[in-house]
Length: 112
Image (cartoon, rainbow, N blue to C red; front, side):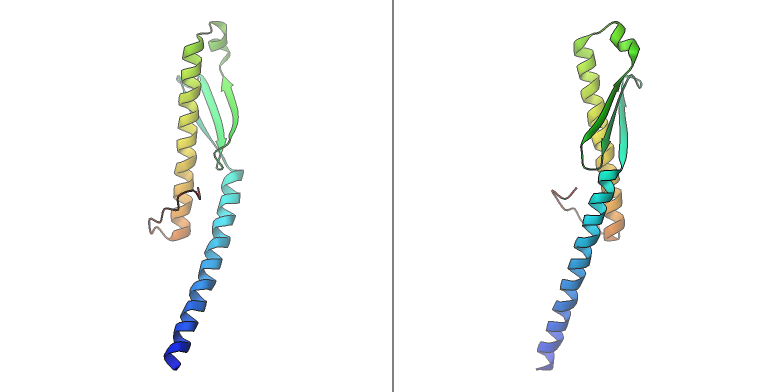
């Protein structure tokens, strides 16, 4: 009988810990959404800023590129800068997740 109570107690502790982890994870997601990181391409001629929610906040294109517009080159540089910014955003999310999980290497697909 006491063994059953011990198992129930352990289960209650696990559920409480899971609830606390969920709250911490939600807080992390909100924090990341408020952060912004940059990516650039073309030697800084194109700069893209994204937030931790993987949303593009701004795109800056150097005026020199607009003077002699090569549409394909500009499109390629914008795509490259977006990809660089998004990768940096994912890196920040992974670093923060590692802090939250104590570096256990836990990957939660779809969370970040």
